[in-house]
Amino acid sequence: MTNATKSRTSVDKTCSPPSNQNLSISTLRFPIQSEPPISTHLVPNRVDPTQTHLFNHIPNDLLLPHRTPIPLCLSACSIPDLGEAARLRFGVSMAVSSAFVACPKLETLLNHHKLETPLGRALPSNNRSRRGLIQRARCELSASDSAPNAANISALEQLKNSAADRYTKERSSIVVIGLSIHTAPVEMREKLAIPEAEWPRAIAELCGLNHIEEAAVLSTCNRMEIYVLALSQHRGVKEVTEWMSKTSGIPVSEICQHRFLLYNKDATQHIFEVSAGLDSLVLGEGQILAQVKQVVKVGQGVNGFGRNISGLFKHAITVGKRVRTETNIAAGAVSVSSAAVELALMKLPESSHASARMLIIGAGKMGKLVIKHLVAKGCTRMVVVNRSEERVIAIREEIPGVEILYRPLDEMLASAAEADVVFTSTASETPLFLKEHVESLPPACPEIGGVRLFVDISVPRNVGSCVNEVDTARVYNVDDLKEVVAANKEDRLRKAMEAQTIIAEESNQFEAWRDSLETVPTIKKLRAYAERIRMAELEKCMSKMGDDINKKTTRAVDDLSRGIVNRFLHGPMQHLRCDGSDSRTLSETLENMHALNRMYGLEKDILEEKLKAMTSGQQK
Image (cartoon, rainbow, N blue to C red):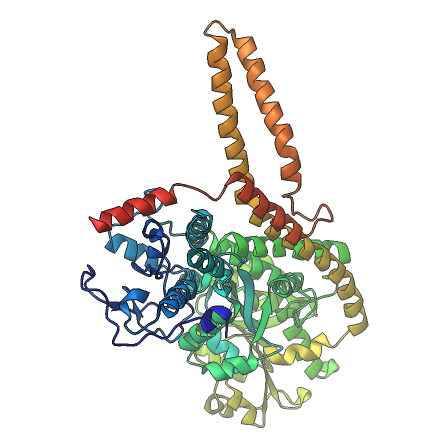
């Protein structure tokens, strides 16, 4: 339970709002989202009437997951039988417990009351911009009149230090919620798999969750991972897990048994390892890097694939390229399709490698790679089953000297009856082979033991697990490729250690980049502030010098003023750097940032005047 939750005051249901309430309803239910609803009369007792506007806009609904109705019109003086001290404590408690919780409902409520933002425009749709508006409101509230009584100051101080401030003061977290071949069976992964065409829709739905700002989906045959920028780690994970359950039909409890969770630096290191091929079944395989690139390509222009998540994936691509270049980790490494070929050859007698009859079902990217790896292993004749012949013709032209026969999809079973090894790599969502289909097939060639091999590298699977019940068939899927990975373990570990050094270095660089984002607004505001002063003083100087000043003198004075400002700003800007180029820690940099904000009033704007105008308008 948070401190803010502990301070929540229970209100008697008989306490009704004042009769002059101008809203059509007396209570509203607000979900926990990214902007706060607005209260209209949370005024502690014995507060100077001129300062009541400070409490008129303190948001309600502090961390109420059960969505309890909150009275919109409530003051300590409206509760009978409360002593003076009790009413004061009640008012302070209500002010403190109504901490800032960011929520998209704010824009709706402002429009309902015909209110405007401090700058007289609609609230920004970007979560970070909206949180910035709330931060400015909090700064204005805490910085305005210091003369009021102790109750007012105490309430604002407690509000400032409230645990709910994490929604607006603390940096959002990068979180990975994932299931991979290392943690979950293929049956679960295939239910959770999201086709590439559905990634933009998934991102939009994820960013529609209350505590998710940005999102990306990495869905392959070996993993289903969701990367998000979350306002709250706990609530973000809970919402994403429930979303995964809803879209897949898998109970939340079952997902929780197999999922893994990583936060911030651990999440960064994980995606870097994934991109480098260190988390793949086959070390250094290149397909995963191409899949990470595809995440960025699909995410371009998609709302929700924001600066933090897109920056993470772009940096991961850089890491993947660097690891492969500097460690030569891809040398001798194979893709999933190559591992499938090696697995099949491991199961066949070595004497039958050249004579075994090969059938490939599906001529897409994976099927094409299987064909190439079979040719590399010495296979000179194979049959390819596909919906159309165009792709098979293209493959035949690309790989001359190899006999590649085409069969239409309706001849699949007949072709399987003539094959010893069947590779399946189609996008079919239903199994192509079930027990009843395989039972009717004749036994495989006696030279390989009369057992037909099905190597299924598709997700969802093209060969049902029930086929294993047939005595003359053996089924292998992507989970069984671990046998291939077991080779050359010593070399794999050595290259992985070299790659980890690179990943650690790149992780520090990425974290420094994220840290630098924290001070960007202050740097811009400080420069703008200095520029306003420079221009004002320059105009005063030029007006005193008269109208007969030549252009050369004007330019010299202008250059002089710019030089003075730049020299003045050099020190503060150096202390706002947080890019890892010096020993300054993030906490030191943020302390410098907050100090500059206070000294130069960089968080202040016209919010005070707007609030006063709205208050006077309501009173009229």
